[in-house]
Amino acid sequence: MKFLKIIVPVASVLVMSCETGDPCDDGFKPHQQNGQTICIPDFLGAKNLNPKLGNTYFHKKYGIVTIQNGIWKDDRNQIIDNIDE
Image (cartoon, rainbow, N blue to C red; front, top):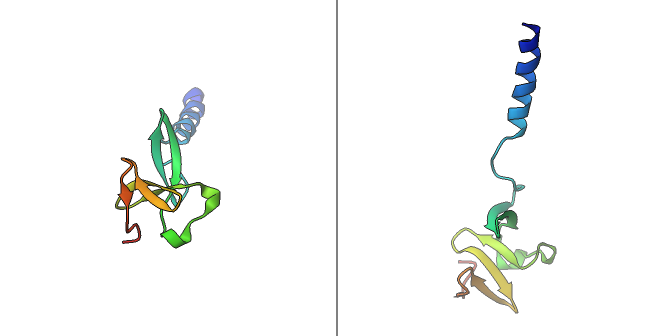
């Protein structure tokens, strides 16, 4: 009986620590790339860009968007003219 009193709490902790879910912090979205999950920052408007976060963002309407030379493109390489709309 003592064995079960020790095993049950330990097993509970192990199950809780293997919790699956969103691996990203607030303000980031998970994205699968080359078999790995990467966290992409949310798009908060063209004027609120943080160069430290790179040039790729998650837009609620367009999905993954990238800015290069001042031009926004979606993941299909289509130009997005009015990204803030």
